[in-house]
Length: 104
Image (cartoon, rainbow, N blue to C red):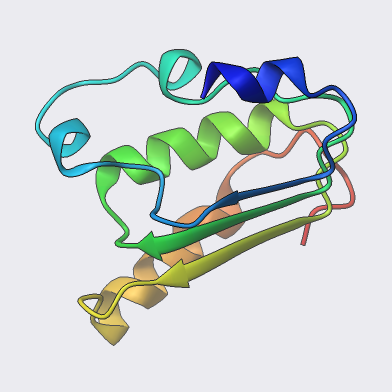
């Protein structure tokens, strides 16, 4: 995903297959390695196949803390998340600090 850093005018980023590959779930990743430095123009991030895994939350925390003009974070859950887990993850995400004051 290094190529993202080379697109300074990019406003929308879509991770269609999610933030993690199966391989990533078995290994520790540092957020700044897994996610590229986001341009100051990224306003929308969409994450598909979201499972609510602990490492996904670490990566989202990093994203929210560093995406200064982010307006929308869209999470599309995969079919394995139960309602209770979805509510717990939603609460955790709402409590995360955000660099952008416009993110909803």
